[in-house]
Image 1 (cartoon, rainbow, N blue to C red):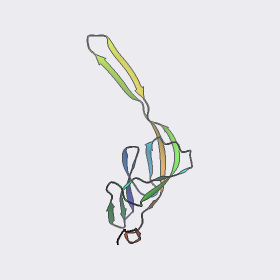
Image 2 (tube, rainbow, N blue to C red):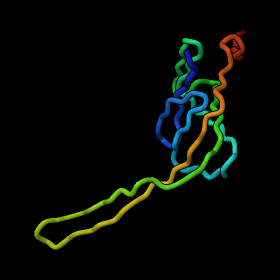
Image 3 (cartoon, helix red, strand yellow):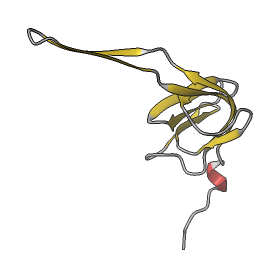
Image 4 (cartoon, helix red, strand yellow):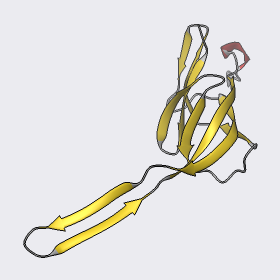
Length: 116
């Protein structure tokens, strides 16, 4: 069984495991920089699944910035019949490629408890 996690980055959720490459919305870090994603929604380790509400406490995913680019063009065409109204615009979303290098999650026995 492989370990995996569900992370949220840029308003979207991604299922990642170590060695995966994901394409997220553009982030300002330069190429080669190590990035930590702290918004981990779920962690699976050795068949044990831990769900967060909304995120898992103490869990982190580290990733390396591999590159960046721009996605395919999305054409926006506005048209109203019988009035000679036509508008054509386009948009290309910028993205960053991240390679997941590690998933860290403290064991349940190691977590701090506020017991009296």
